[in-house]
Amino acid sequence: MEMEKKEVKQFIDLIKETDIEELQWESGDFKISLKRGEVSNPSAVKKKAQEEVPVKEKKYLSVKSPMVGTFYKAQSSDHPPLVMEGNHIVPGQKIAVIEAMKINKDVVSNVEGKIVKILVENGQPVEYGQELFLVEPKA
Picture: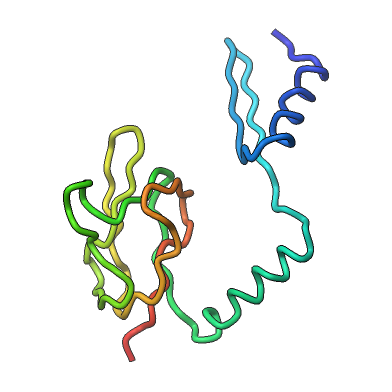
């Protein structure tokens, strides 16, 4: 089955008119994957850059997501968060959980220091390699 330009344009229009960032569709042997690029609103870009400058100046280290999935601060909904901003962490310490397709993967610290910022909200989808925590390294 060959997709016509008109059908591809409909998928593109669907992404443009909504807040959908990524769309994947399969039908038989045909697959299409569309991903929205960065927003090119100069004022939004400028504002984002201004917010990040103070954080990056101190040369914080980051802990990144080991996989694509949903970020959780706790082992389960009836447990307290594994860590919070201001907590000291050490290499090998479990600090969060990523869930994908009912499979949980621990987010383990690879650095030692103090968590200065948790960059994602509980229950938020994350990408592989996305920064999850900013950590001030131990002096």
